[in-house]
Image (cartoon, rainbow, N blue to C red):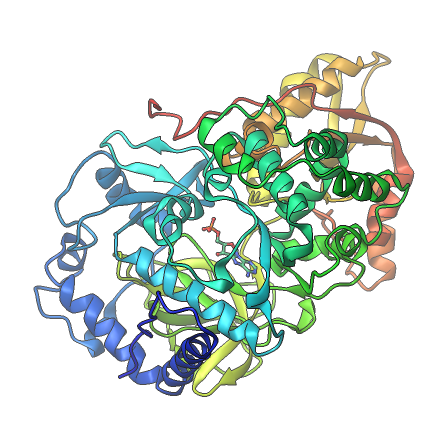
Length: 606
Ligand code: AMP
């Protein structure tokens, strides 16, 4: 049975590097060729080691769980089904509820339940699995782009704020957990994991200090940089915007060799001053580039040896492709992996392909994967806990068919419905390769926020009812748009308003409406606004009466049925956005940030 490659860490001569790469590629060959057997083994391991946990016993398993019984009887669940168990864990119950191993922390997913981030209890050994997936990326890349070991990667990586659950477990995003772990901090020397950002800068929780020092170090080492990136496209674009806003200060530091006094974290200062040396020539070169009116191609202009931009541009992040092509002068955009807080899923084995052609190969050792067929393109099967859903095994999915991903993990999720819809695009040996189609029920997204139509509707209704009625006005129709032409991007709501009297509505009332909508959105959205600065203020554009009729006329002229027509609650199609914008008579922005604090509303944070 294929095992994860045991990567030797000390010897960094070239032949050793080649061996290491070969081992990794062989591992991928082995696990994909034996996907069926590997999946059986993974499920057996998960079920046998967790046979005594409360959750499995509750579902009728008394210490003995065989594959066939699991396959034929076990229910598919969503987060809300598990929430009572997760709450017990978060509140300090250490008995084996979901998993026989001790829960090490709770990962806070960007998916939400009841407006709060989902909490995913995890175990220490999962960090090893995440590291394994990361270790596959560069050997794969090395097959397509040579000499990546001869320079550095400029990656903008960040940690986010942490909270403690009432029971004392850390609650933080999966990447924060990973960057803070010894797997990342104490990683052995690896020419492929040589970054311009010092660990101290990545681990600094103050986002300004972290971004400033990472950018400064990236500029100081600019000629060594062979690849640039961030996790998501939105994060990388924010870094470029940061440079646009701060280059005079950054160049001043480089000219004089003195660090901006706003960087006060002592460990960050210490790490940065090791890299920062007075270099007036470099400062001048940078200033000449940054002063130019157009920032087209700024990435290769400043970092001339860059071979590709490593960011996720699949799923909702595809909205950033044009902006990245502008800054990158069409440098290849590389999406390397597909992962979540619950589990890391797979890698892209052909990383230089176009973003529209990216397919992810699921790595069968990561978890036990099953697939729920999507019957019609936009109607995923509603989950019914009393009904047994026909799930398809990893190796049995059909080419061209869409599926919802269902996972069983070592950390204690059993037939958990992830919420992603994937299409089978091919196979690597016996393991399927998937195109990421979408996340179920996401209407709006700028960064890691995911707002669904119901949530948006409730927020809009609350704002309109609280502020418009007193002016004898009401909301006749609305829709929304994720505007990524601004950096950071922001939500735009188009409102058509009916007036029953001649009372005019002051500007401040619409601003209050913007804020009420923001206050009503989930905590991931509010964190993006308040703490990460990854989402700009929400905008309401009031459109003249009849604008939504024009949208309907357009849809009908394009084949929509007049009887079944409903105004879309979210628009993406450029001609419709154009109709809405041309009907706009005024616009208003949220005057301040909504309230947000780390952790869940009901927890005290520290
Ligand atoms: P989180 O649980 O907050 O880590 O978010 C995980 C989700 O992000 C996944 O379930 C996907 O919906 C999305 N995601 C992660 N990686 C990718 C990718 N490579 N392409 C598209 N969407 C992704």
